[in-house]
Image (cartoon, rainbow, N blue to C red; front, side, top):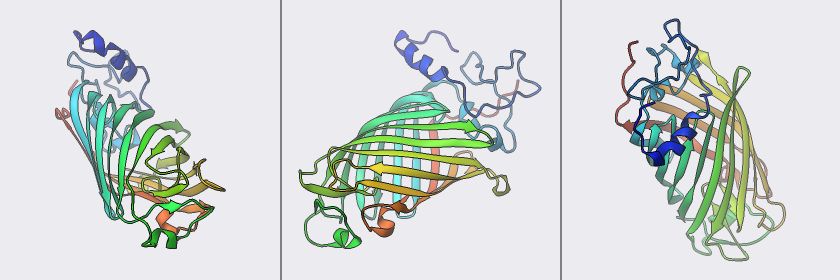
Amino acid sequence: MSRGLPTCLLATLLLLVASPPAFAQATPASAPENGDVDDVDVHGRARVGPLDPTPMDRDPMAYWRRNKRQFFVGANVDVGFAYARPTLQVGWGRPHYMWTGAEGMAQVNQNFGGVYLGWRAALPELEVRAGARFVRPFFHPVQDAKDSYDIRDLQTERGNPSSYSLYEIEALPELRAGPGFVVGAFTAVAISGVDRGKEVFEETFRVMAAPPVILRARLGYMFDAKPLGRSRIGVAAEVIDVPGRVGDSAIVRAGVLMMWRLHEQVDVLVQLLPVVHSPDTLGLTAADFNQLGVRYRWATPDVPGPRER
């Protein structure tokens, strides 16, 4: 660990190094005698050797793990089926691997536009974020509250789309279990800008929503799909509850997740979770196809190449 860090950064640094990586590499024969593959040199770079030809088998984030701990500017650019979602990050740590800092996101698709600003802390086993989101629907009008809705309610020309705000906190665990990984998403969202007695189709969660909160719990399991190259495939299910809705408010979705690494900085992401149970009949409009495209990761300063021992 590099010396001379400002005292004010000590707490953040301790947070970033407190937990060992979930995807830790097996110790190579030429590793240091202490066997600590997450040791760092005098510049703060991780002491890891040249990359395995298929690093997904050991550490899918090895490309970013090699970076030294430092202040950085990074980005995730998601482009997919009818959406674009660029995210800018400014923080301290190893970008995209183990860091904490601020992030801002813009999002647009055929139905809405939105911006998000928040804070994120990332460890290999867990990411936590909190922030605020502003959403502007293009088509779906505010509805008078009722027990259930069908697709005709969203397609009606009565009423006008109305902007609203979300205040979010989320935990994203990813833990090794057996031959694969347990993945999850636990989210609590306060919704503002929707009048009493009204409900709105919330565009990011894709559910009919009303104040005060939206709650989500998702669990899934993914494993390495070696015949497809550096990829993972799995299944997931989630339950979303909107306590402020009239009548039954539980929505259940289940489906498949997939990640295919084309390059150390480029992934293909697939998330297809159709509705299994809902008080509404909204068809594919209520399915979660939030990831169906490509993600490009970038950060500066550049990640150093494989380090000779």
